Amino acid sequence: MSELNSLILERIRDVPDYPKQGIQFKDITPLLADPVAMAAVVDELAGLYQVDKIVGIEARGFILAAPVAYRAGAGFVPVRKKGKLPAETLEESYDLEYGSATIEVHRDALAPGERVLVIDDVLATGGTAAATVELVRRTGAEVVAVAVLMELAFLGGRERLTGVPLHSLVIV
Image (cartoon, rainbow, N blue to C red; front, side, top):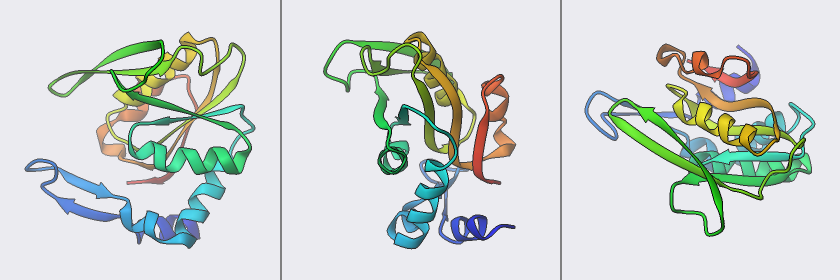
């Protein structure tokens, strides 16, 4: 196990039965509170690809994506839940375990041909990440990769991102 993997795993807290019974929530707030760990994660993600924009997925993806964009010298673009962005948007709906959800990006946030790295904290079933990739592509921008702090491999989210490079700092 690499030093970065250890640093990350030692600072992620498991919270049983949150947000509902049977779920083992991966709490990244101890990692965020540690300036050495946070800097190591930001530096690693910022050095992965040369891109024009970093897209952060609501909400914990924002926490990682904004400093990564700053460090990489790239713009930051938020992808939010429907109804949270003030200007004209593109939207993409996707299925959840029970129901569906819709995310949006500002229509003018990305330009055709821009190179984009999508960042989130955790890749679980992959629905939100796949919908985000589709939103970015609809703007004409190029998705260079999806990068996540942690991939929950047992949930199979990677399969929903076929044709898109996935970089996971930690896989559990």
